[in-house]
Length: 243
Image (tube, rainbow, N blue to C red; front, side):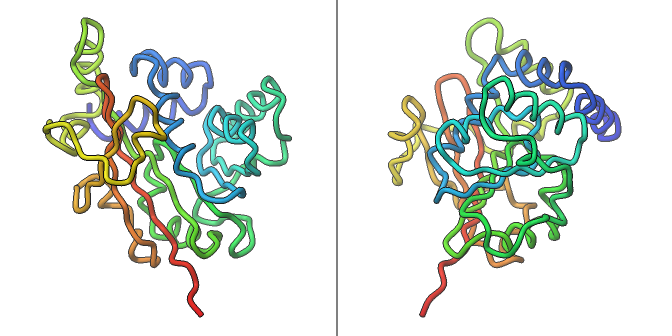
């Protein structure tokens, strides 16, 4: 699929929450929500901003976990869908989801401890986005990006889904890392993620187009694995102020 057709497809999905729900569930063997949940064990502090909250599932998860959350979402259809999710799960209020742009965040400096973005579109590669994230993060704060994930060719169903992913995303969807021996877990994140294993991957290509260093954020790259999938996480950490 050409980049133009892929962009058109995603824009169509973002205008219909039923299609979006289907597209984020069936083609990924129901693992999309699992991948979103990888954010939870990596959050710092209590005040959280989500960029591009989509249907609002992760936002509701974070609110239920006791975090103080706000969200900025560009699509009016997704704003409505996310607010509906909060109503159904009886958490938060409509005003906590703002229709706006990640390049112009409507918040004061140093408002949040963590900024979250899962499976973002092109806005995450814009230097203005990262500059705004750095501005609203408190010293010692963290940006967490679930940039991508893919299924492993196990069982009978997932190899068929992988063929579909190849058609939509092209070979780059599987080129971030090669299959390797079981990874080392130096940070202990695997315990936080139950049956998942996490490894630090400095210098890996995924996340390389996100201009973290340009805004003074320190880069960390992680791969989280289960026997069914791999997910790729890029984090940008704001240095704590020194006296």
